[in-house]
Length: 181
Image 1 (cartoon, one colour):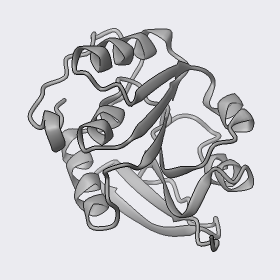
Image 2 (cartoon, rainbow, N blue to C red; image 1 turned 90 degrees about the vertical axis):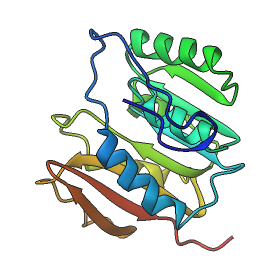
Image 3 (tube, rainbow, N blue to C red; image 1 turned 90 degrees about the horizontal axis):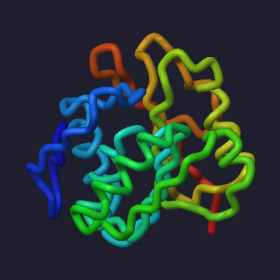
Protein backbone atom coordinates (compact mmCIF):
# COMPACT_ATOMS: atom_id res chain seq x y z
CA UNK A 1 0.00 0.00 0.00
CA UNK A 2 1.43 3.35 -1.02
CA UNK A 3 0.56 7.01 -1.55
CA UNK A 4 0.40 7.57 -5.31
CA UNK A 5 0.34 11.36 -5.60
CA UNK A 6 0.92 14.68 -3.92
CA UNK A 7 3.46 15.67 -1.28
CA UNK A 8 3.84 12.11 0.05
CA UNK A 9 3.96 10.40 -3.35
CA UNK A 10 5.72 7.03 -3.10
CA UNK A 11 5.33 6.69 0.68
CA UNK A 12 4.75 3.04 1.63
CA UNK A 13 2.18 2.47 4.34
CA UNK A 14 2.71 -0.57 6.55
CA UNK A 15 -0.32 -0.95 8.82
CA UNK A 16 -0.37 -3.78 11.35
CA UNK A 17 -1.48 -7.08 9.82
CA UNK A 18 -4.21 -7.62 12.41
CA UNK A 19 -6.40 -4.63 11.40
CA UNK A 20 -9.94 -5.66 10.36
CA UNK A 21 -9.66 -4.19 6.84
CA UNK A 22 -9.74 -4.89 3.11
CA UNK A 23 -7.77 -1.93 1.74
CA UNK A 24 -8.49 -0.49 -1.69
CA UNK A 25 -5.83 -1.94 -3.98
CA UNK A 26 -3.14 0.36 -5.36
CA UNK A 27 -4.42 -0.37 -8.89
CA UNK A 28 -8.02 0.59 -8.06
CA UNK A 29 -6.89 3.61 -6.03
CA UNK A 30 -4.69 4.86 -8.86
CA UNK A 31 -7.58 4.48 -11.32
CA UNK A 32 -9.93 6.32 -8.94
CA UNK A 33 -7.56 9.25 -8.47
CA UNK A 34 -6.92 9.45 -12.22
CA UNK A 35 -10.68 9.87 -12.69
CA UNK A 36 -10.93 12.41 -9.87
CA UNK A 37 -8.01 14.57 -10.97
CA UNK A 38 -9.96 15.32 -14.17
CA UNK A 39 -13.10 16.26 -12.23
CA UNK A 40 -12.05 18.12 -9.08
CA UNK A 41 -9.35 20.34 -7.64
CA UNK A 42 -7.93 18.51 -4.63
CA UNK A 43 -6.52 21.57 -2.92
CA UNK A 44 -8.72 23.04 -0.22
CA UNK A 45 -11.55 20.50 -0.49
CA UNK A 46 -13.32 19.01 2.50
CA UNK A 47 -13.48 15.18 2.40
CA UNK A 48 -15.42 12.65 4.47
CA UNK A 49 -13.87 9.15 4.39
CA UNK A 50 -16.36 6.57 5.68
CA UNK A 51 -15.20 3.11 6.76
CA UNK A 52 -11.70 4.60 6.54
CA UNK A 53 -9.86 1.48 7.74
CA UNK A 54 -6.10 2.03 7.42
CA UNK A 55 -6.65 5.63 6.30
CA UNK A 56 -5.06 4.88 2.94
CA UNK A 57 -7.63 7.03 1.07
CA UNK A 58 -7.64 9.77 3.74
CA UNK A 59 -3.87 10.08 3.51
CA UNK A 60 -4.03 10.17 -0.29
CA UNK A 61 -6.46 13.12 -0.20
CA UNK A 62 -4.34 14.90 2.44
CA UNK A 63 -1.18 14.31 0.41
CA UNK A 64 -2.89 15.98 -2.55
CA UNK A 65 -3.80 19.11 -0.59
CA UNK A 66 -7.27 18.53 0.85
CA UNK A 67 -7.95 21.18 3.50
CA UNK A 68 -9.84 18.81 5.79
CA UNK A 69 -10.31 15.04 5.85
CA UNK A 70 -12.71 13.53 8.36
CA UNK A 71 -12.15 9.77 8.71
CA UNK A 72 -14.69 7.51 10.38
CA UNK A 73 -14.23 3.86 11.30
CA UNK A 74 -15.64 1.65 14.04
CA UNK A 75 -12.28 -0.01 14.80
CA UNK A 76 -10.28 1.78 17.47
CA UNK A 77 -7.15 0.05 16.14
CA UNK A 78 -7.70 1.52 12.66
CA UNK A 79 -8.43 4.97 14.11
CA UNK A 80 -5.31 4.85 16.28
CA UNK A 81 -3.16 3.71 13.34
CA UNK A 82 -4.44 6.58 11.19
CA UNK A 83 -3.93 9.12 14.00
CA UNK A 84 -0.33 7.91 14.48
CA UNK A 85 0.43 7.89 10.74
CA UNK A 86 -1.11 11.36 10.32
CA UNK A 87 1.02 12.73 13.15
CA UNK A 88 4.16 11.05 11.84
CA UNK A 89 3.69 12.54 8.35
CA UNK A 90 2.40 15.92 9.58
CA UNK A 91 -1.05 15.54 8.01
CA UNK A 92 -2.82 17.81 10.48
CA UNK A 93 -5.87 18.13 8.24
CA UNK A 94 -6.88 14.52 9.00
CA UNK A 95 -9.23 14.01 11.95
CA UNK A 96 -10.05 10.36 12.71
CA UNK A 97 -13.09 9.28 14.74
CA UNK A 98 -14.15 5.92 16.16
CA UNK A 99 -17.83 5.65 15.38
CA UNK A 100 -20.39 3.47 13.65
CA UNK A 101 -20.67 5.08 10.19
CA UNK A 102 -24.46 4.91 10.06
CA UNK A 103 -24.79 6.58 13.47
CA UNK A 104 -22.23 9.19 12.41
CA UNK A 105 -24.19 9.98 9.24
CA UNK A 106 -27.39 10.46 11.25
CA UNK A 107 -25.65 13.08 13.43
CA UNK A 108 -23.53 14.82 10.76
CA UNK A 109 -24.52 18.38 9.88
CA UNK A 110 -21.43 19.58 7.96
CA UNK A 111 -21.32 19.46 4.17
CA UNK A 112 -18.48 18.03 2.09
CA UNK A 113 -16.96 18.47 -1.36
CA UNK A 114 -16.39 14.72 -1.61
CA UNK A 115 -17.50 11.68 0.39
CA UNK A 116 -15.78 8.33 -0.08
CA UNK A 117 -17.26 5.15 1.43
CA UNK A 118 -15.44 1.82 1.43
CA UNK A 119 -17.68 -0.44 3.53
CA UNK A 120 -17.04 -4.13 4.14
CA UNK A 121 -18.27 -5.89 1.01
CA UNK A 122 -20.49 -8.23 3.04
CA UNK A 123 -22.34 -5.33 4.68
CA UNK A 124 -25.98 -5.60 3.63
CA UNK A 125 -26.63 -1.87 4.20
CA UNK A 126 -24.33 -0.66 1.38
CA UNK A 127 -27.28 0.39 -0.86
CA UNK A 128 -28.56 2.62 1.99
CA UNK A 129 -25.44 4.83 2.00
CA UNK A 130 -26.39 7.10 -0.95
CA UNK A 131 -29.92 7.55 0.40
CA UNK A 132 -28.70 8.60 3.83
CA UNK A 133 -26.05 10.96 2.43
CA UNK A 134 -28.59 12.73 0.20
CA UNK A 135 -31.40 12.75 2.78
CA UNK A 136 -29.06 14.30 5.35
CA UNK A 137 -27.87 16.87 2.75
CA UNK A 138 -24.20 16.47 3.63
CA UNK A 139 -22.88 16.88 0.08
CA UNK A 140 -22.31 20.40 -1.21
CA UNK A 141 -23.95 21.28 -4.56
CA UNK A 142 -21.95 19.67 -7.35
CA UNK A 143 -20.13 17.41 -4.88
CA UNK A 144 -19.42 13.69 -5.30
CA UNK A 145 -20.20 10.59 -3.28
CA UNK A 146 -18.14 7.54 -4.24
CA UNK A 147 -19.03 4.10 -2.86
CA UNK A 148 -16.63 1.19 -3.28
CA UNK A 149 -18.38 -2.19 -3.47
CA UNK A 150 -18.32 -5.63 -5.09
CA UNK A 151 -18.64 -5.46 -8.86
CA UNK A 152 -21.68 -7.76 -8.78
CA UNK A 153 -23.60 -5.21 -6.71
CA UNK A 154 -25.66 -2.59 -8.55
CA UNK A 155 -26.28 0.81 -6.92
CA UNK A 156 -27.63 2.53 -10.04
CA UNK A 157 -31.23 2.85 -8.83
CA UNK A 158 -30.51 5.99 -6.76
CA UNK A 159 -31.51 9.14 -8.71
CA UNK A 160 -28.12 10.80 -8.11
CA UNK A 161 -26.22 7.83 -9.61
CA UNK A 162 -23.81 8.89 -12.38
CA UNK A 163 -21.71 5.84 -13.27
CA UNK A 164 -20.05 2.64 -12.07
CA UNK A 165 -16.40 1.85 -12.81
CA UNK A 166 -15.30 -1.77 -12.43
CA UNK A 167 -11.81 -2.92 -11.47
CA UNK A 168 -11.93 -6.71 -11.19
CA UNK A 169 -14.05 -7.69 -8.19
CA UNK A 170 -14.22 -4.08 -6.97
CA UNK A 171 -16.29 -1.21 -8.34
CA UNK A 172 -16.70 2.46 -7.61
CA UNK A 173 -20.19 3.92 -7.96
CA UNK A 174 -20.31 7.69 -8.39
CA UNK A 175 -23.18 9.91 -7.25
CA UNK A 176 -23.36 13.69 -7.77
CA UNK A 177 -25.36 16.30 -5.91
CA UNK A 178 -26.93 18.21 -8.79
CA UNK A 179 -28.87 20.66 -6.60
CA UNK A 180 -28.18 24.32 -7.22
CA UNK A 181 -26.34 26.57 -4.82
